[in-house]
Image (cartoon, rainbow, N blue to C red; front, side, top):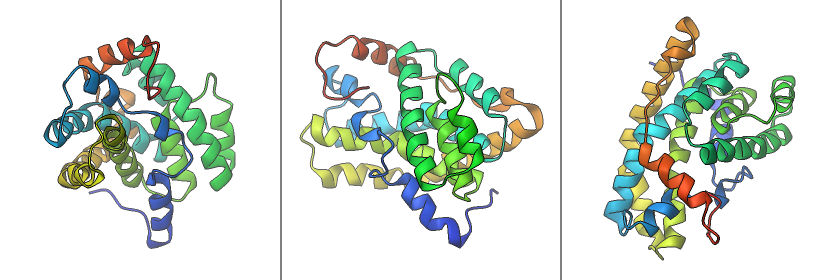
Amino acid sequence: MSVPATSGARAALLLLADGRFPAGGHAHSGGAEAAVRAGRVTSPATLAAFCRGRLHTAGLVAASLAAAACGGHDREELDAAADARTPSPALRATSRRLGRQLLRAARAAWPGPELDALAALRPGPHQPVALGLAARAAGLAPHDAAQAAAYESVSSPATAAVRLLSLDPFDATRVLASLTAELDAVAERAAAHAAAAARNGTVALPAASAPLLDISAEQHAAWPVRLFAS
């Protein structure tokens, strides 16, 4: 079992996972906007199904990359692994845009040489890699980085659905609460994958696919008018 953050770092984990942390996530729906327009997300029940699917695919991949980065895995190898696991050009661009924004916030909160070196990576790090290095700079453990990444994978669409569907915020919160056990399980799996990657390389990281998210992201990027950036 992974070792969680020490009590002294627990507040840093809360800060990193807080939706008000200025990492740019508020402008992104995690695919929810396209799913709403397509009629796949229409209610709290369908939102829960969407979030569950995203958690066990894109969320697991992101959490594993973040945990590996937090554990000290080579950042360039991880960035290449993130590229290989993100077939959609629109999602690759979004991930790097969010990575750059998150890195700016992390360098202000926890300045240090590792984050400075990551900032030199061009065209900017993927978001999970930046998240993992930010967690490392904050004194967190790989499991905590995985937990933050897994939570972000469902909190973004749930928050966006409040605006997209005029959904009751209490319903969105109930959706997130219903996923807490699965969030914990995904974080554990991601930390285990990261530990395996430390021994066997990035080939040990999961490559769970969500083709509909990729297709929808490409369609969404071509919309002339949209509420969210992705």
